[in-house]
Amino acid sequence: GIVLVAPAAGFVGWLYLDSGRSNTGSLSFRNRLKIPPLLDPTTDSDGRKRFRLDLREGSTEFLPGLPTATWGANGTYLGPTLRARRGDRVAVDVTNHLPERTSVHWHGMHLPAEMDGGPHNPIDRNATWQPYWTIAQPAATLWYHPHLHQTTAQHVYRGVAGLFIVDDPATDALPLPKQYGVDDVPLVIQDKKIKDDGTLDTSKMNFGGLTITGLLGDKILVNGTYDPHFEVKTELVRFRLLNGSNARIFHVGFADDREFQLVAADSGLLGAPQPLNRLLLSPGERAEIVVRFAPGDDVVMKSFPPPLKANFAYARLAGGDDEHDLVKFVAAGTLRPSPALPATLAPQPPAPQPTGDPFRLTMGDFTFNGRTMEMQRLDRVVGTGTVERWEIVNSQLIPHNFHVHGSSFHVVDVDGEAPPAHLRGVKDTVYVAPNSTVNLAVSFLPYSDARYPYMFHCHLLAHEDSGMMGQFVTVSPADRSLVQGDRLPLA
Ligand code: C2O
Ligand code: CU
Ligand code: CU
Image (cartoon, rainbow, N blue to C red; front, side, top):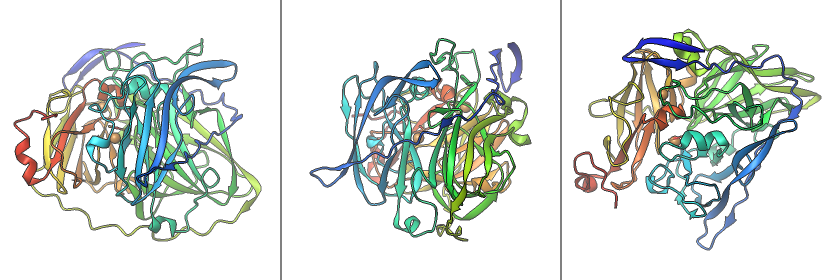
């Protein structure tokens, strides 16, 4: 219905409240969970691992007998999983057969901004974009998705997204479940609104004064599968979770409240497994968890109403207080034994020490510090390889989150308190609850380039597209003079 929302830190307006209530109860878990295929690279003449992504329109039958027009990479909806090792030199040929220009951003990847498909690297219709870089970060679950200014929400919603898994020797040596699709299982969780005629509802992709979070769907897809189940064959299963929704916040757990172990955050492994029975994931965040199953188990992974702070009044506008069934796990009568989970995972580097004054970003009415995204404006210049303290203030009664490109961060505190267990790893995206402040120690990369900016933004895609995004460059002292005022010196 239509509701008049009282001033929320200066925001007043008519809002169409569309909670996209869950259809929990009607699910029968009849569809086998799809697993995104691993994409085989070729080795090119420069010795690089070369991947190929073809972005196309297609048709996908999420609901039986009801084809839905979708977009995908190398398929009709979502894309394959790319996989490479630390130290690998990789290249990707991305060809755009979509009806409009797009881009592909490597979310969480540490790479020069020039090789990242942000708003400054559009791929025109029928053109091929060929970024290349060296994988220079620890093992992690990353992802890719379009990122043109003002069409990100549309393009991701239609289905262009996939995982990019980074491996390294230290992680290989750990006795973690690692058979892809068997006991190492990606779960790309998204909500969708599918109209009666089978078309995707793509209204309210932008803020546009009509909605404060963008569209929330009433159907949950996991790896593009509606109403899914997965057959468990091993005692332990590692799930690589991605909240690939435009706006919806998931609070993941199991119907029987079983404990699971968090083993990795956005940017890689934790120092040790963290036992949890709920995990809050806002759009763009990833987590790896390991779950123990007993023979014959039959248990549903769900999204539960989030804890009090996250649930604060307007958090429900991001669908936060709904309950959703995500996927049902059915364990075989006999399970293959899994090695015990190691007590320690990856040695954690000492917490980075920020230098200089904190950089404060106040999230306002779809702005940072009162400004909306401008392609030619620089919002921050940072030194290569430095660590800065970024203070992210959500002054609103609206949920937001915060993501930084081409780097990772530690959460220093949330409202002055030590971060909860699930925020203690290295991350690139973090939930910023209504009326709260999150302090980050952001470690910037060594690449110096004054021409190509990195982005920071809210990953609720309607907010991002409405201008809740800013740009920064990392420059060496020698390149500092290339930046004049707050203009971007694009070649
Ligand atoms: Cu996943 Cu700038 O985004
Ligand atoms: Cu990103
Ligand atoms: Cu936001």
